[in-house]
Length: 440
Ligand code: GDP
Ligand code: MG
Image (cartoon, rainbow, N blue to C red; front, side, top):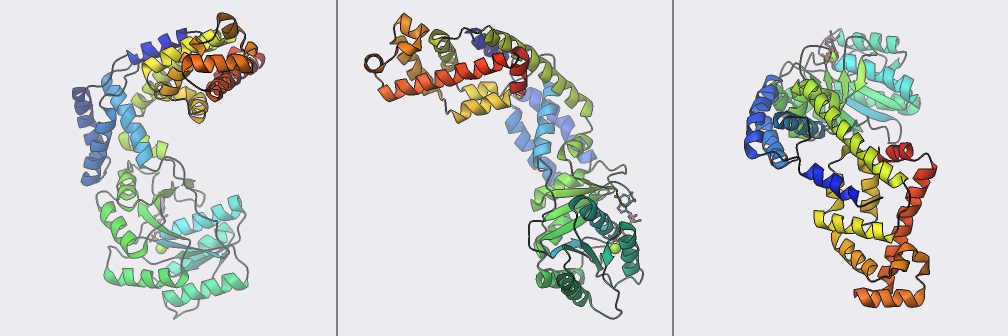
């Protein structure tokens, strides 16, 4: 490792940052894209405001335009707003686990119930019972029964004349008696939200206390998604959302709206009429779809990767040359303290997460860097080359000379030792390549 590391970061910093004008201009286009994808207007406004704050002053990567950089920042913010990572259906509860499916008529509740049953049986090895509480349409219970047969799971025997609540309670009784792991309760929907529907689902919700209350929504639902999601969430407290018909043309902006107004994660995505067309909801994929600017996002990501790789390679070569002593460490510290927080600088290189974490774990802040630099400058040349010379009396002298304590001297030596060990290990493991791997 040499002092050249500082230059790398200096150059990164000098690449320029996004001005307010850059951001405002780019966001105008983004705003239209979001509205076009059917994200609800108030949600668009909030989102744009948040992103604007994040984007102004952000660094622009070499080889991309400010506008492209904003798109990338928007994309990342969108992924985050959509939940960031995949959130699975909660199965961490004592059996039988009730899952309540709610939503408007035609949203895909019954189909999704069948799909989910199949998924839980095959992927999670669960014993699933399907029960239709839909007494509205005569064919509804039969529809679910047929889906159950196709999914090769059990369905609750149909008994005419029972209320939805009675069916729900019977389903739970059967599940307990016959030791089912999961009970999926498919409810009736209405064409629009009405008080009677809500009261009915509410009574079921409070009787069976489901582990998951999943709101099923058609991805084609545009601006209405907010009203629907808010109403169901207020009445029932939904735990997750399923978006259906993502195989269609809809860009899926409703996902962002619903997530924003309910805070509930979107857990599953329906992608077709077939029984196996149910996927985990992938925020990255949906963000790309909502924004419709996947090419730009990809471009910026590639640019980031190129820079990352070029810099990482340089860094790795320097480290691989070996010979790392306390003088190198000191010049390193000096540059770092000049530049502010190290983890912030490393944060500009998307690939160095692991090393960044190690540094954060070691809690190296800049004031400490300065103190450590003072410690090193209180050492003799020989000591800096060969830290093993530093026994108790020398340590005392160095501590006094730098206005620190023997403890701090020890801590520095330990950190230096850790860093050299890490480098040696990387060199041994195949030098540059291993280093690159470490950085990913
Ligand atoms: P429910 O009234 O909420 O129970 O809705 P259904 O489950 O009966 O679904 C209504 C229609 O939507 C049916 O024809 C389904 O095949 C269809 N459907 C449900 N989910 C999807 C999906 O993800 N993609 C497509 N293309 N069609 C779906
Ligand atoms: Mg149905």
